[in-house]
Length: 183
Image 1 (cartoon, rainbow, N blue to C red):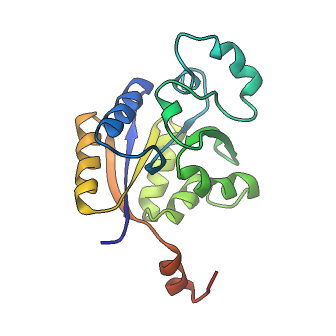
Image 2 (cartoon, helix red, strand yellow):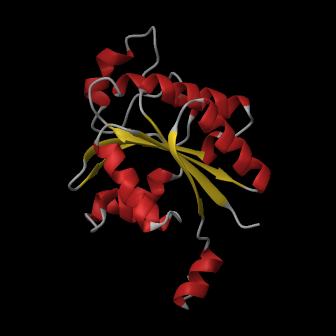
């Protein structure tokens, strides 16, 4: 079976923290979990370690990335992105690489274009982009087999996430077959 990603939308920071904890408890690796959410008041706290003076340093560090710690600090590659037409976002995990080109190059398609590149059908990618614009928190979990797909879906369902979907990941060999080019 080719690799797949399982996606969902969380509606609150509390729900997002619960999902990260559940995924971690089920054995998913931090570099297989991606999170993407608007960088607005309240969500920044998700990336800050509780019980410290990290929030006081957040303003100084906001331009270069969120402060690691707390639940989100366990995830790989946390940072901030500014996507034209969307605004500032906080991202962690493999989704950072998928969206970095969009943020830097101002590519047409915004979040949806990056998500399509990750294997999400275009209509679902546009729906996810709309949910993120409304304050939703996008999760994706990269899986290796059908058991992990089922487990990720179960975690999302038990946490009360919505818009749960699965997309096939496009690997280098698959890209070569589609484009005829070799990297």
